[in-house]
Length: 539
Image (cartoon, rainbow, N blue to C red; front, side, top):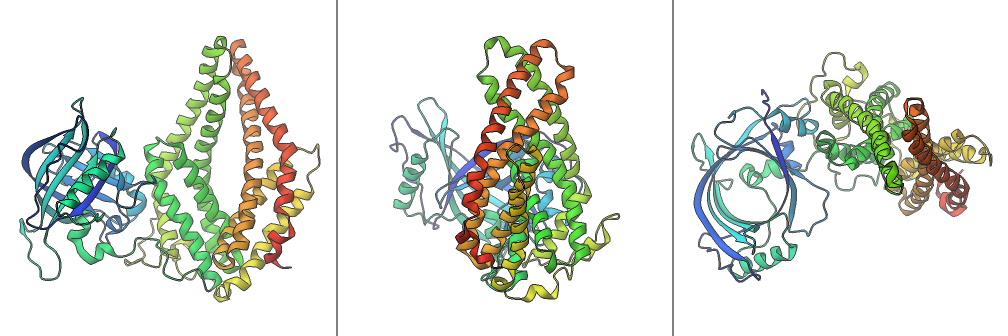
């Protein structure tokens, strides 16, 4: 399907859905709070077409993509925001405004945001719904919308007519309550309580399109863990660990593209590093050529993510330090940080190019096809130029992967642990910073390996992973300080005197951090090296 380009707006949608019976009537809502006024809007008729892949992977993952003739295109994405169980918190992105927009072409901006889930599949219409909407706004004392309450009578269309089926619901009714951006969440509780008292059913977070599509849309999402997996063979535990990291990467892909939260880059980088590390640590369980090709592709992606993440970390640290400098350094500080922001912008452009590269989508598809237990469509054709070994997608686990996980995995984690101990013991009190960097890398690999093994070993592996995370954090601070110092020295010859003065103050701050972490890391290592934490490794 051809994509078109339209401007996109974004907001956080917070709503609750409740099922209602045919005779339900909206109760009075004027008295729910001081200054609140309930204002009815005229009833409206809406018609929406929903888009998804043939196997409904968007709907199964909680993603909704639709076009309403009256509103244009809307994409709803799950968020990590903590919310009560009944509350649906989703990021809502809109493109276009309705009738004048291309009716059958998904806007390019929205298509990119679901590309990691669609990958080498395709988007097309999967459902058409007609809604008769009765709408009430709760306005606050300033006339702003504190909450919207809509009573929707929904019909599933087929060929322009209301569908008729004895197996699936073809019409239903629901009430939605959506909070305004500045509304107190307690208002939501009050509205829901009033609706329940009037006869509405319990909260039901099922999206309209899922109810319309029926059982297929309720199948497990991609990369869902099968019941009991991780309790048996080494291969099952490894597959579960890879799935967890891949879920993280897919979940943060839209944020990578939107670029408004540095945490998305961080989490995607961690996911990529974890997969690469696990492919290294558990190599004896894997087809060697398959794993090496994947590690090479993941390295390519990790480098793009790393360039952006390094700039984000530098900016965050420098901005804190600059805030404490004299106001006389303000202009010079801003010019210096402007250089770094320019580098960050350039790195982000390179990353966006990588995310739009078929190479990236092919990599994701190979990973999903290997570890997803619920994949219902055939493994897709691989684009020309993709590594031949990755294209196989089958037979990636060796026969040894069928051994009991609790017996085999500790011996595989033992290797990165021994490498970590050797690196830690080799650090001299006044040795080069590279020695600490080496310890950090080894700690990270061992931590990731212990996290995977925890699927079979349980708490002993989790406790070791937690201790190694603390070591990784301390040494990560040291490495960040080293990277910051290196960047400041690399631009020093281009700075004027005022900028150089600021750079010197920033550099002094980084040296302070480096010295503090060099003094403290050994105590953290000693806690991780306790015999009771590593007893499960044997040997």
